[in-house]
Image: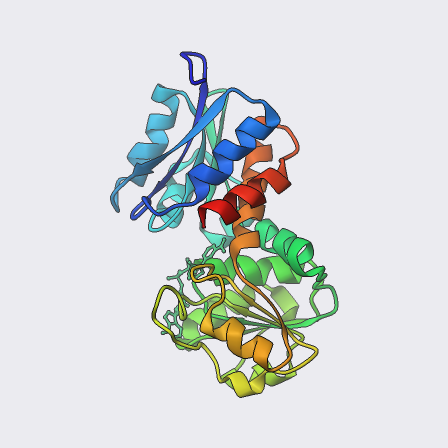
Length: 272
Ligand code: NAD
């Protein structure tokens, strides 16, 4: 039951009404027996700094941040972790003793999902990441941090690809679409294939057995890319495990407790 003592966490974004985060986090609080509640605030572009300031006056202890606010929140918090600083993006804010800290849990969420869903450890793998936006940047950095042999970024705009590849340090490169054929792990971090757009972010004939293909898109659950990859013998996974993984990391940052990940994954699947 929500009472006057219930602690509050929230997501800010626009749009945000479709967000699965309230279902995932409220299931987590219930499973852990914590007197917390999680709500969604539709905050228009340009107002993220106001939302971060509101955390203090309203006593909001945790914030998830989604489009279009991740960069604005990085600039609005009192301090950022090295990951958030490197990415210039924050997806999770912790408020403690009146100070806000910006974190980026997308990379850890991605790695957790890779392991939990597909039992894949990227150490030593040749990886190709499609896209150079916020999600791609987090994935590129996390793959390099996990010991990938190479992380090649494929993107329409080369300049953005160069900046994203730099996040992988010496193992980061910029590559063309053909590089997919030699990859062990291919990650789609573009929105191509989302909803009913039906698009493919690459030529599926470059894919085959022995490869792992992950689509960060999770709506639909089986994107055209995943369908085409599976048909050619690749192992596939969608973006839902990453969503659960980044939420689990946020839960632990806010509450200091281990996240009830199975309850969170079940809630994500049920709400999906
Ligand atoms: P973004 O706008 O920051 O970046 C999108 C990238 O895709 C850019 O590099 C852009 O050049 C590229 N792109 C866009 N349209 C393209 C097209 N038609 N062809 C080729 N490239 C194209 O977006 P983002 O926040 O990085 O999100 C990217 C995708 O990842 C979205 O579908 C989002 O829903 C998904 N995502 C999933 C999770 C998760 O937890 N599963 C987390 C974050 C983002």
